[in-house]
Length: 263
Image: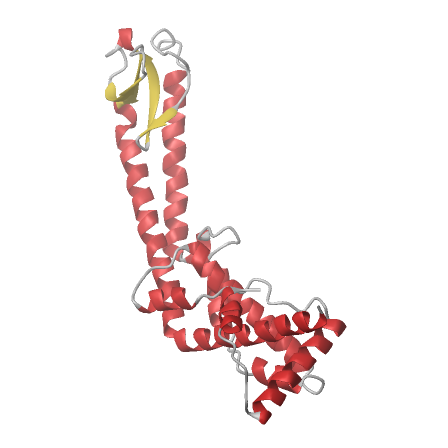
């Protein structure tokens, strides 16, 4: 059900040692019995995250989607470990395999604390990020309030193409009729294809826009630091994660053999 298990299946060769042959057959028999009794037993969510772990060891900062793949793999491993540990008497060979799993609960917990299910970094991932995001919202609100007062002012109605606020190059601007250029003082950021409209950033919001952009950059830097922290955490537990993936692959192969035997 995942690539690491498929890799093991493709590498299979016939065994000639009687003890090894019996071990393999007993493992397959146990897997068949387990899947008959508990057909919902799966490796759901597991990924071969070994390349991600290697990247983290080299100092790469993993993006949220890859961090969630690591977490999902460890959660799948934890679930299998719990299931098979409870059934050790019935399935000793599978339980022995599951005993090798190291689900690294602290990594699962830390990724869950910092990221939501969509991969967004949570506000409370760090006190600094929470503060920056509060300030971003305040700065954004000030820009909107100021621009709303400009576009809805009766004095400016004649000059504006439409009473709307839009964005150009990450800055908030308003559409001014080209014929009235200069009637509202500001920085020109763009023009319409026809040339009839220019998009200006009124001088009164330049500083507000600057503050907002600076806070956004600060937010991105803090997000990068948090992702680097999580990636470093994974790198520190590289050996355990790799061993867990290899164990999941062995269990995946056992379940595939069981299904193949039934077929």
